[in-house]
Every structure is written in C-alpha cells, then in structure tokens.
Amino acid sequence: QVQLVESGGGLVQAGGSLRLSCKASRNILSANAMGWYRQSPGKQRELVAVIGSGGIANYADSVKGRFTISRDIASNTVDLQMNSLKPEDTAVYYCNFKGWSLDYWGQGTQVTVSS
Image 1 (cartoon, rainbow, N blue to C red):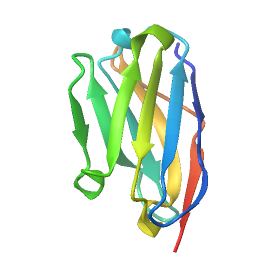
Image 2: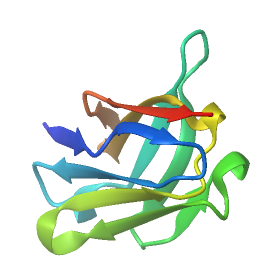
Image 3: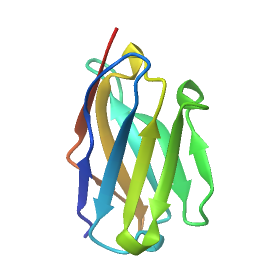
C-alpha cells in the first residue's frame, strides 16, 4: 500500500508558475515510475509527466519546455514545476505511483489558470 499526498495547487494568471509536490509513504525507488496526470471536466485523465526508476523523465507534448518533473529520493517526493502556464492547463492534477502491477493515486490538487 502506498499513500500519496499532493500539495501546491491553486489559482494563477496565465504566464505564471506553480510547483506541485507529491510525498509518498514509501521509498519512491520501489516504484517502476512516478508521474503526474491531469483531468479536466469532461475529459479523460491524461499523462503530464513521468519519471522512471532510472531517473529518465518524459513529458506530454503539450507541456514540453514548460513543465519539469523532479524527485528527491531522500524525502520520497516528486515535484512538478509548471512555468508559462496557460488556461488550458487548468485541471485537477494527480500524483501516480506505479509498482507491483498496481497504480496508486493521490487525492488530486486543483490548478486553475486564468486568462
């Protein structure tokens, strides 16, 4: 069992920045991958960024060059730095832990970008 606690969402103007943080209840190196997903009303949950156990990161095309995923193994946290935010980035953002053929999810944090 893994608990994930997210923080850092909020309201920001277009062009602004936010940093999301996800703290896991166990060693994040035990995950095959950890990532951030988002879901907007009426849309399916989509991958935003993921970092594998080896530390390689991948991003959705829509956020490349603007978002950066990082991890702190000592504190079992995975962060998402979001810069140059756009109104279309508005969504609930979820932290994900993939391990042992299971997906664990955080409770989600709202990000709202005003135009």
